[in-house]
Amino acid sequence: MRIVLDTNVLLRLEDAGHVQHSDALSAIDQLDASGHEMILVPQVLDEYWVVATRPAEVNGLGLDAAHVDQMISDWLDFFTLLRDER
Image (tube, rainbow, N blue to C red; front, side):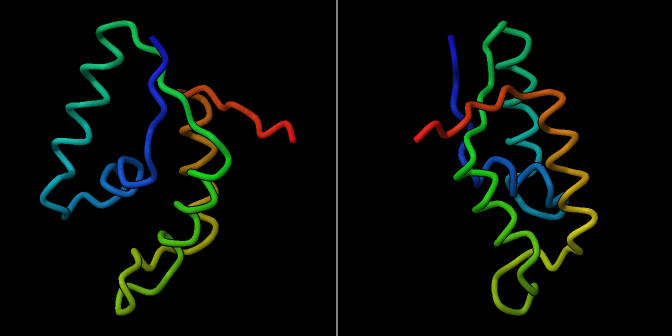
């Protein structure tokens, strides 16, 4: 089964200090172990970029663009990207 991951899952995976970080890791592990295909779509990656690079004092993660770019690259090695073919 294909499972589309929400932006919040990526944000929780990134933020080790968040109360839901371990839940996000566990969910990904369980989906992977069950043979599900985890999907990303461009909108989710765009939303992740915006929140991840936004300063922490205005409800972001405050990460630098190079780090966020690397995380997206790593995720694309693990998750399937469905392109927006408008």
